[in-house]
Length: 252
Ligand SMILES: NC(=O)c1ccc[n+]([C@@H]2O[C@H](COP(=O)([O-])OP(=O)(O)OC[C@H]3O[C@@H](n4cnc5c(N)ncnc54)[C@H](OP(=O)(O)O)[C@@H]3O)[C@@H](O)[C@H]2O)c1
Image 1: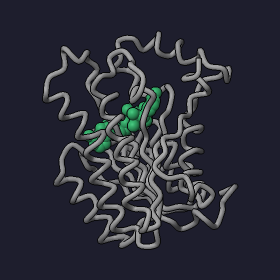
Image 2 (image 1 turned 135 degrees about the vertical axis):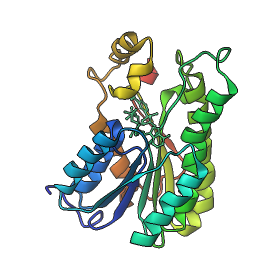
Image 3 (image 1 turned 90 degrees about the horizontal axis):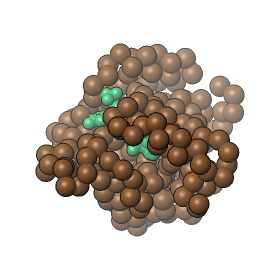
Image 4 (image 1 turned 180 degrees about the horizontal axis):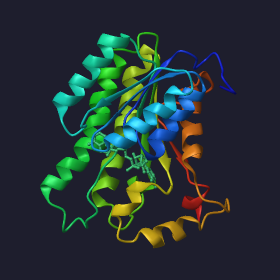
């Protein structure tokens, strides 16, 4: 419980897709600050259970709720359960994502719907539901990627969904400002997680990402640190922005 600040202590953070990868690191960093955690997942039960056990070691509450973000009714039920137990939340991190790695000419409408539903519709629906529980204001952080503005191989469906997510960020930032809810996005460079397994060009993606001025690869902790900052009072006047974190990769 080092670095614990009063600001995050006993607050409630929802992290979508908090069971693995970057989402897990975000859960751990909130827990380290003393926040209680609620996260969802959809397929990998064992990893979700392991993450919950790790979070509980920080001495905070941790609720794990199975919720497929592709299904609107499951999102409604997810927030009903949160409301019945907590009545109030402080932070929502729209982190979960999925996608189908195909060229635009090969993608089918069912792939488009799957990807856009999970990566853009769900963050919109979750943000609306969470905003109703942010009774003392709060923060929403949407996790985007460089493929929203840059053409990345096999990334058509995810890239377009992330562009929508960044636009959602701006609209919600304005709409929620009077409720003292801050909305921002993080556009991250490549981080090695399970998500890369489905890319046929995984190896070249990793070596290419190292070609950045910082001289090291981006980590899950780098992203989680920025999430914490964007949920802190220090970032109160940053609204509707997409902050790029990639060690300068996008500059060269
Ligand atoms: N990795 C990168 O290089 C990178 C770069 C830039 C941005 N990002 C963004 O960072 C975020 C996290 O990425 P990651 O690499 O950590 O991904 P990951 O390792 O694949 O983890 C994805 C998480 O989302 C959950 N999830 C996926 N589909 C879901 C659904 N339909 N309903 C509910 N939960 C679902 C997964 O749950 P299950 O375990 O149950 O499947 C898992 O917890 C994403 O928004 C991604 O686009 C990643």
